[in-house]
Length: 154
Image (cartoon, rainbow, N blue to C red; front, side, top):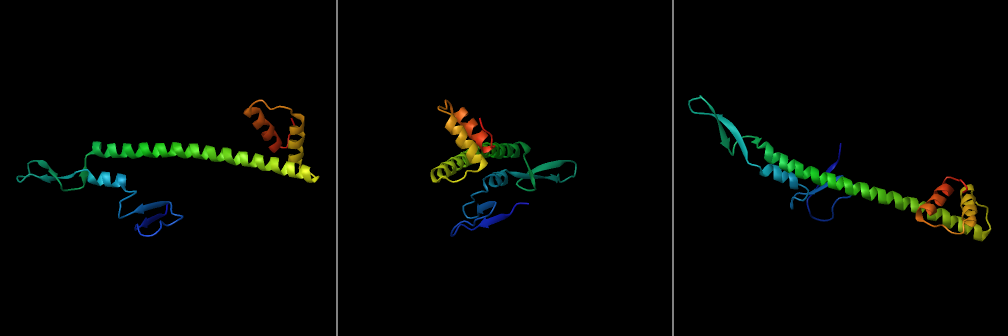
């Protein structure tokens, strides 16, 4: 169950909330407001009770087609945000992987410069890098680092 924090709009937004909405500006209530704006209707009996009449402006019924348009619009936005989130997560994972590679390379170089013993991962990377005179493509470079991260020698 998600935690909802209602923000009054004064001061800074609360941190750590999964959902922050501004009551005064109605920010975050876009689709709710659109659903509430759909005209409502209800049903009443005719004065002689012989038929049922549709009464505009009263009741809790709304037009299904109008509601579906609002839901479809919201779902499109959700799908777009999910795609953006997936791309950002992939970018974050790639940056994290690169960071691990650079940390390993830096620690290997420092250990070599200081004459310290290398970890098995550092030794594998050092041996691999010393035997390669040219890495042609980024994919080959990635393969070297991936192998070193796994403690293998190429």
